[in-house]
Image (cartoon, rainbow, N blue to C red; front, side, top):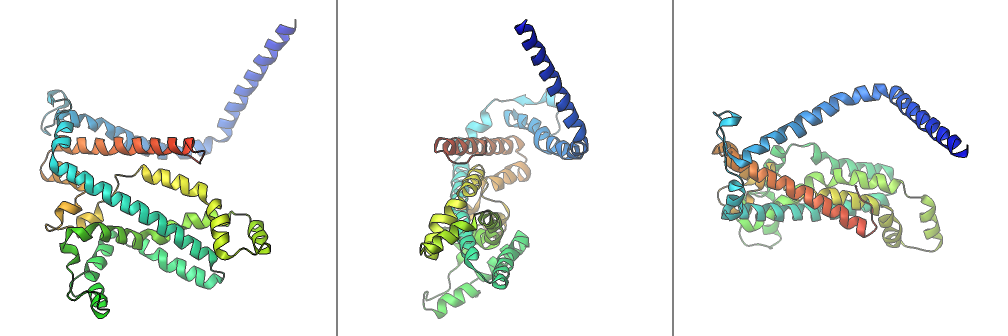
Length: 319
């Protein structure tokens, strides 16, 4: 008898749960309908193109149908890892990605900490506005400003000459050893203000009572930064770091393509430029697709590894 009652209660709960589920779906139907265009966009532009990955395993010829293509297995992947030019491109991409990652994170966090210490609202908003503005400029404008500033008669050389740091103008964009630093500095100047937004938002969620208690204990501003502010935004830093590691091969395209030239080609080419060069300029779509697949696989692997590492260390994670 007791078993029968238990089963009946379980059935009722399951039916009730199912009814509640459908009622929730019905209540949220408008939001579901609103999400359909976004879902269709993601499927159309993020998942349907994966079909094109099959070109990496073919000697793809545009004039032939899919059934007439010649399948070559991992031939193009083998060529990539044996090609010195691709290994050089991979080196450039990793180097510039790491530089952008380190500079981008450190400068954004430092600027956010400094802005958080400004008590005058007028000055705080003024600095924020000035630092945000370059984000809204296109890279074609930014690279034009950078190229003009780094010209032999540009403002950078003029300042260095007047300060007696150098004796003659430096050809910044003609020597490869300067290129990675120029790209990193350009990214910082353009995005540092924008990247501070999320850190400032995280700082605003910190309990003010912690700062009041620190003031009572006589803590200085630096003490409060290191013992209250930074620990308070630590979860945000970890999440953003994991996402950035997932884009470790996203060194950029526009700035390298626009600032690069024949004199620094060994330092400026990235995987995106390599794909453009072979895929469109030379019509080798199979090799370009193989390079794109390699980039995607590495990005997903690094994202999962960074997330797993954060989990093992007991930190915030994406998954």
